Image (cartoon, rainbow, N blue to C red):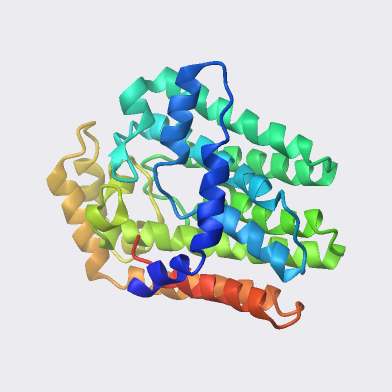
Amino acid sequence: MASGRNILEEYREDLDKINAELGGFFDSRVALAEDMGAHALLGGGKRLRPLLFLLCCRLLSFWRDDLYRLSTIFECIHAASLLHDDVIDNSQMRRRRPSANSLWGNHAAVLEGDYLYSKAMTLAVESGSLEFLGVLTKATVDMSEGQILESAHQFDWDLSAEMYMEIIRGKTAALISAASSSAGIVAGGKQREIDSLAIFGLNVGMAFQLIDDLLDYVSTEKVFGKPVGKDIKEGKITLPLIYTLQGLSDDPKKEIREAFKTDKRPEAAVNAVIELVREGDALAKIHREAQGYLDKASSALGGFPPGRARDQLMELNNYLIERDF
């Protein structure tokens, strides 16, 4: 599992420059907006979305000085969505630190999410590309729809795998797809190249979320950066539980439903569900499905010439399937 961390270290120069751009991102006349933004943007994170944008630009042999600045758009939109998520879920921790809503309150956290989203769109407008801006706004619409769908299906014990996939396609994969395809737009790529990068990013995003939901049942809080079992506590029925429930008879299913009727989400019930998921074959099945999405992502790169940039994107695929955080 350590290989995933080592792969990210290969991009230390890129990550440092992304972080430097994020650090200089704030010029608000409101000090609280700057403090909360720094907390949300500079408190860790893999920087997957801006890194994919940069690597996809290199895949097209395109580079210019402002690409690091443009790459921060995707991290800002991502951070804005996490601020809103933590309010919705009443989360107290994010990336091993107190969440913004636990420090400044829900109202301030929601407004800061709006602020970061607006800053990202301001930067996108500065790019001068309406096509770029259109991809970003479409992605944020998809993200919102995914989050709304997820909220509508809270504690929906009959949630289908198909609906789950629709949820994660919106809430996670859409922005990763936008980060990848936007590189093609900025680089002046051909439409088939832009379309291939969009497909690549979509499949990467699907795999990423599948592994994230798997780790919620098998990782530890120290490694994962947030409490394990967080999804079921918040009523999020993800694929590990969907597959596990499909293999249970009616009586065990009924017991689980009854245990979660109380608002307190008893720890014993949460631990029992985690053990059920771990004991079955759901996790192995999801791992295979995640690999299938990554295989599709790799295939989408097949039309690009071999070289270091393509190899790096393939290596990131391996990181996604192997990561433990």
